Image (cartoon, rainbow, N blue to C red; front, side):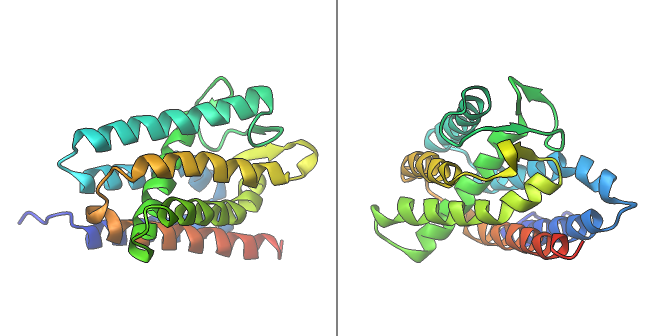
Length: 214
């Protein structure tokens, strides 16, 4: 019997992946293996978003291409020229790199941008407020991500200090992306976006707590 992959089933997949990954990160024996699987987790989340957006129209295709390009380019400028975010470099956790930037980082921008755009659309009807709200939520998620990212070799800041420019830069880049997403219909991914944000928030909050005790 063929089982259709709807938003709820896709959301359960996301939650299970994040929960299992969270536990795997915390166990010394399994940690190296789960860290190695991080890019695949990102690919699955991005794949589910794109799958549920179908049929993909031209606006969605352009948005996907632009988000990846903007996200990757901003990170390239950051890593190689200390622009936008500050002085940092990437570790090996996020996989293969070009120009010092993991290919997966554009995928991460894609996941967060679509997810928070869909959530902001649920919280507001204002075309002015939606991109601002989504961008602020993305910065809040980055605030949770940063300590975990540093501890698990996602990326590292100069002198191990996260500069305020990082959060300002995140908001600026996110806002540009969120304005582009105003042209994309996100109704089909509202449920999966909620699952992704809950899964990521739980993952990073739990690991922040774990890191405070080790």
